[in-house]
Length: 124
Image 1 (tube, one colour):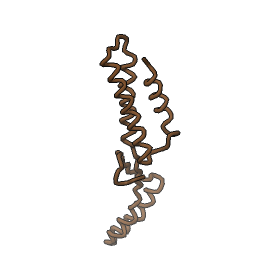
Image 2 (cartoon, helix red, strand yellow):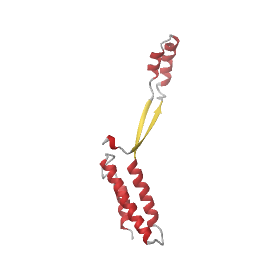
Image 3 (cartoon, one colour):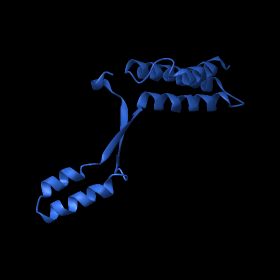
Image 4 (cartoon, helix red, strand yellow):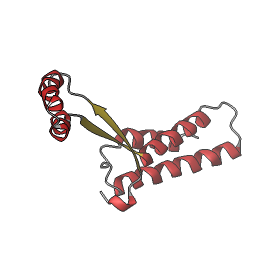
């Protein structure tokens, strides 16, 4: 991925491994009693942090497609609506291509979005 050009939201989740934490507490208590607080901190440093990356171009593409789908479902569409649908599907395509260019997946990963994009594009 081209890091300086990243377009993502990162969510960090900190978790305490419950299976090993009680044993760590038993090790830490005597260390604290002995005044060895730095060693105690190191022993408790068992928090696991998971990072979830959410590619923003994909989120934007999905939102744009929802808007286009709502307009294409409209019974009495006007010419302005048709132009808006066209703009939305072109913006969707741009976002999908941006996601691919930034390394957030390949064309195969975005197949459902491409299919939706093509369906919206073909509707009158």
